[in-house]
Each structure stands twice: as structure tokens, then as C-alpha cells.
Length: 439
Ligand code: PMP
Image (tube, rainbow, N blue to C red; front, side, top):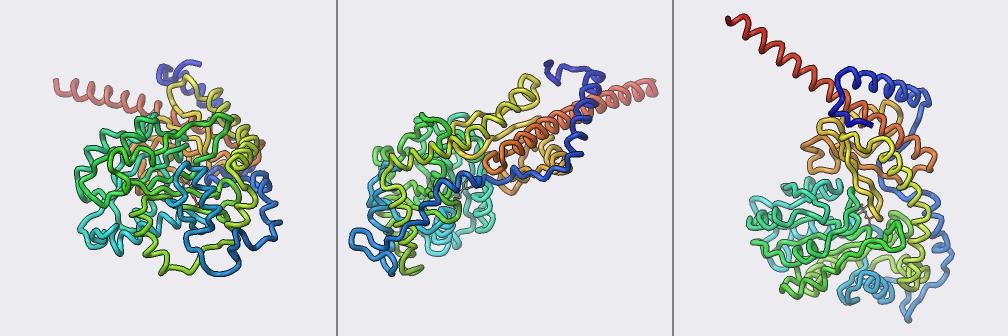
């Protein structure tokens, strides 16, 4: 297929006509499909049902039905520590959501300051660096707390380190969100060089923290998966032990919203966090921690469980990628990554077309993640990024949605190109008209 950009007006019009016909056929199906959020599907959730059969209430002589053990059960701290290759003393178990851990951490920084530093709320300005495209809920936190967001472009290896190094010279830049493995939405795993460079950052603000959201730490779609260098091994080499606050959860391992979360940080940071925790509650949900521990027992079992998830998820990712390859490749109107894990596929289309694609899809009954949501303030400066979440719909529905999406991407691109051509014709026409009337 010829690149759209190399087609003349007639070729574009003919192609548009046939695409619009396909679009109308989809519209007639009266679809109601949702590719908007990265939720596990029923089959994935079913894999963890035996968690609920657990009847035990004690472990290591700890009565899990009662108060206490704010840091979490030692056995589940150890399990997370082994999974994430960190020291178990650096792990604190949270409730069911890692987002809550992040929110609380920022709220604490705002109200009380980090490790004895001035509360952020007392500062004139607080800024965060946001790798883009990124996760809308991270951006929502910043907006909620009045933190100014600065876009940092992603590269194939993670966020652009040169840009970061320039921006952190400003001491009002207090933090940065990172999803280092299978980033949301691109599915990029940070390279070793990126992880090393992050661990070596030298920000002007001493209370600058990288919120390292390792939501997809074991979420490989194939057996090998990507290998993420352990940032906690790199930090001490740079005397930067306190730089990183990592979070993770079992939301997309067991039950989304009913799993177990954890926060991993240096002793200094955890001491700081514990000052809040012990005021905030008496204990976490140790029964859920126990159920999760008993369900997995060890890291090998977690990995085996994730391979079962991959058997369900991989065909869905392949389905979308196949449509992208078959319908959009070599047309110079779209590009995408083929992720080895995580929950999303990020599609970049011709600038100025994403909103139009969102509208066309919606009118035909397919809901995509809100266009623009992958950028701070919901503003994609290029209007070109679309996040695809293939996990939730059954594969036959997904297949229809992906097919329709590809049709809409092509229609929007042709509309844009025809518009450009028309504008060009008017410019030439008017220039000639004025030129002639002048003489
Ligand atoms: N972080 C990222 C990057 C995510 O994609 C998600 C889920 N979409 C979450 C956090 C949510 O995690 P939790 O359920 O543990 O709050």
C-alpha cells in the first residue's frame, strides 16, 4: 500500500469512500465496546479464586484477625522483597491500592514535608516532571494538589535524561513519576543506562523524590519478559539512597482493587512514612495479606501465575498488533510499540487526528481512553496519542474494536490530508488572485 502522504487528491478520495463504507457497516452493528481502561478480564480474575478458600487466620504466631503489624506480615514483606529483589526491611505493606500509597505520600509531603524539609504546601511553587505519554492518574494527583506538571518526552529507553538533568536544576522541581517497567501507556521498559542515570540524578531540591510506580513488575506477556535493572542496587553507588519511593501491588496479579500493595524505600524514607502510618491506622488488612501469601508462598508461583495470565492476555495484544500491522503499516500515518508486557498499546497517529478518531469510534459504539488523557492536564500538544487497553473485552469484541479503530485512524488521516491540500489550493488561489489584481 502506498503511503497516504504520497497519494494525490483523487486517490485519497477513492480510498476515503471505501473506508467510509466499512465504517458505516460497523456502525450498523450497533456496537457497545469498551477499550478505555486497563482492567483484567473475568478469566484472569478467575485464576485467583482459590484465594477466597483460605480459612487460616494465623501465621508465624501472628493472629491476623486482630489489630497490629502496621508494616505488614513478615512473610508477605519477604515475598514482595524477593519478587522486587530488595531487602525485606525496606518493604512496608499497604492496603489494596498502590495509588493510595502514592497519594498519601504526596499528601504527607504537602502537609508535613519530606524528611524534615519544608512542607510543599508552604512553598510558592511545586513542580513535578511527567514523562509523556504517561498515566492519567499520576497527572490527576498533581492537578489535585496544585503541583505544576512539566512534560518530559519518553524515548525508546525511558524518559529523556538530558531534559530531566536540565529541569532538576530548579529547586521547585520536587519529584517525578516513573513507570519503569512496561510503562503506561507505551509498554517501554527503561534501559539499564536510563535506570543508572535516574539513580545518579543530582536535583537541586534535597526533597526531590522519584515516585517509581512498578505496577507492571511481573506482567510479562512472554516467558522471557523485559529485565529492569534494580534501581535500589544503583542508588548507593551515587549516595542517593533516599531518592526513590517505589510502589507495587497485586491489583493485576490477583484481584484489581482487592489485592495487596507495598511501598519500598530507604530506612530514612520509611521512618518518615511510618510517622504518618501509625497515626493513620492501627493495622493493615492482615487477613488479605495472609490469603495472598498462602496463595503464592513463593516468587516462582507468582511467576507461574503470571504466565497463566499471559496465556489469556497475549492473544488479545497480538490481535490488536495484527490489525495495526495489516491496516496501518507503511502508510506513514501511525506508529506504535509492540510491548512485551503490561496492559497497554500506545498508538501515535498523524498529529491533529486523535480527537477526531476518538469521536468517530464513539459514534460507532467503541469507547477509547479519553483522548489527551495520556498527557498532563488532558492536553496532548500534538493531538496524536491513543491508549489502547486490550485486556478487558473478549477477543471477538476486541477484534471488531481494533478493526474499527484502524478504519477511523485512516479516515481521520485522509480528512486531514485533504484539508491540507484544500488549504494549499486556497493559498495558491488567493496568492495568484491578489498577485493578478495588484498588477
Ligand atoms: N499504577 C499504574 C501505572 C497503573 O497502570 C495502575 C492501574 N491502571 C495503577 C498504578 C493502579 O494500581 P493500584 O490498583 O495498586 O492502585
